[in-house]
Image 1: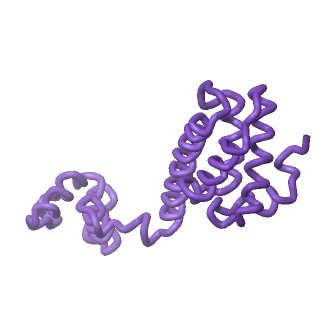
Image 2: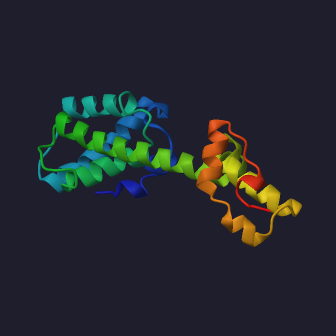
Length: 176
């Protein structure tokens, strides 16, 4: 049996979402994944099971890249997501697990991307603590305070005053 990772069909569609794969190609892919799962589980699936799994891959889990779907079949059939028979219900449970992983990975990737953008990651003006940091740094850079005085100004109290709309001046923190 051919390893699905070596399949030209898999190579072509691995990074694409299931819903973007033409039905004939999706059928080929799911049939390959099912054949691998059959070997791992020591059982066989009928055409109705295959048809249901194709429908799920193109619709309910159509947002998943084919590589994630393949991973679900491979890992699920090896028992990584619990035990079960090779039925649409069991395969749906595998896809649910893979879907959770995918959503977690996507959320993490979006967060990492946002943190790479200094405009998003470091928008200190949004928060009182950020505004307090900006204010302290401005005082330091302007020469209004020394680095020793900078350390004496409690960030938490400065942020609290800013959040409350109270005046926050150097003299409030450093007696002169």
